[in-house]
Length: 192
Image (cartoon, rainbow, N blue to C red; front, side):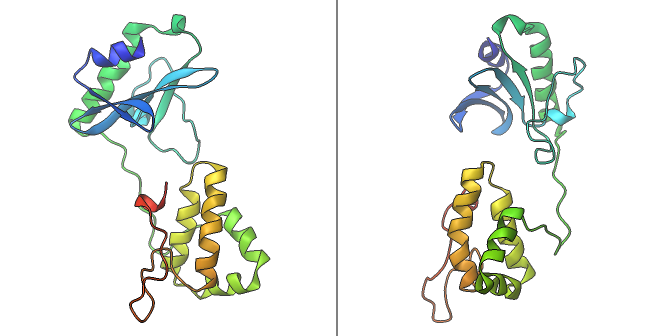
């Protein structure tokens, strides 16, 4: 039923991250998700919707800035007129360019995630090597861990970066002093 509502609009349907996502001018507007106990619609810039029914939720408080979702546990809960109103508002906001743009962090300001802090305590060599890295390279490592959404991904990333840190390399260092490719986590967007 949610898909049928989205298809009534001018949005284009595609499959991203294993779920239907609806775009306007190739910009993500909303998507549909199904889980074991609920399903729903998420709005990429839902924090900017009026939300008169007070139904939109932030799935990761403190992490997710703009995305909001509306959960349902049964098709009977869906009021098609209300859902369509939210969808149309999201489309209008996209057309008008009303978007939530994340604030850029102050240069040189970053937080080392607890997982990385604990790993650095285990090895004196790695800890000393991390301290010797430039603040920029330290921040890259911190963000690489923080950006991972799942704990298993954070752990996998931590395992990949500890040897690089021990060698005094930055996350994206491509070569040693002789031009030999020596280090680099190679994946787009640092392996989301």
